Image 1 (tube, rainbow, N blue to C red):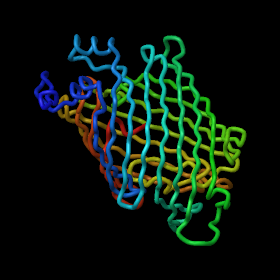
Image 2 (image 1 turned 120 degrees about the vertical axis):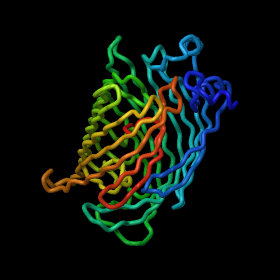
Image 3 (image 1 turned 90 degrees about the horizontal axis):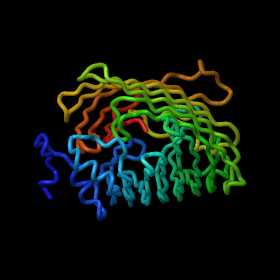
Image 4 (image 1 turned 135 degrees about the vertical axis):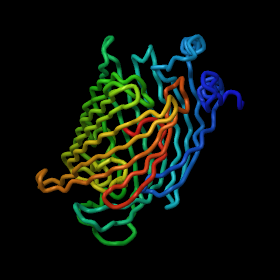
Length: 356
């Protein structure tokens, strides 16, 4: 087993052989949780990697090559955190027909203790939300291009309990025990050199999600998303990444489904609005083929209905971290990021890139 954790190419710690050569059973993978919204914690996943015969032949015949198409993965996952939040679920991520079809599906149950900030208020309202989350997502490559057309369906039944009685501004009582269902159409462009830890290329997309009572939910509203992630090599050692992201909702959206600024250094749901916009820049420096240092900064706004873009405040974060190439043949890098947001310092354990 320990021999499989050493790369014969450079004699360094590497999990490629262990992951792919043991693809005949479930592999336990422990992980840490460092999301500031739920506290610190941990859990474990049992992962089953489905490497095709063709992928295996290519890997064994080209040990120095990094696979551009990741193997399909089936997993069972569970975790808990210091504030009492917990999650368990099953999922499958598949790549079929030489990456012409991409699929992601899962069923998750959880209970999360979070904070809700009504409007632009700085007063935190503690609440618990628990329920089941069901996802089906598929993308089809358009001919031999880098464009994908896809669709997904999401159904989430939830029950929310605030830690005090009384009405909370902006929350309809029906939202506390409800079901939210949506169908979405999306168009994605993806020229990244690796899906786990890209170093060059572009991923960009637009998506329109339609939440409707006819789909099995209790709400009628629309959600629109646009994003672009770019990765480029400035030189052999230096790399630069850029991220832009916009989201907007219209209609009777429940409080927990409003967009929020999703950046390192900012807890989930801390800065919510009916519209959000953000940008991030990340600079990387390769110490060698295994170790990479990174620095990043970003800023964004969460805008409520009735307010203009200029009315909202910029929320900025910055930080630094490192990555280690833990699975060379998969191009998978892992590491730690330390980020400072508007209110606090946070630490993140990263598997792959920070931008999803």
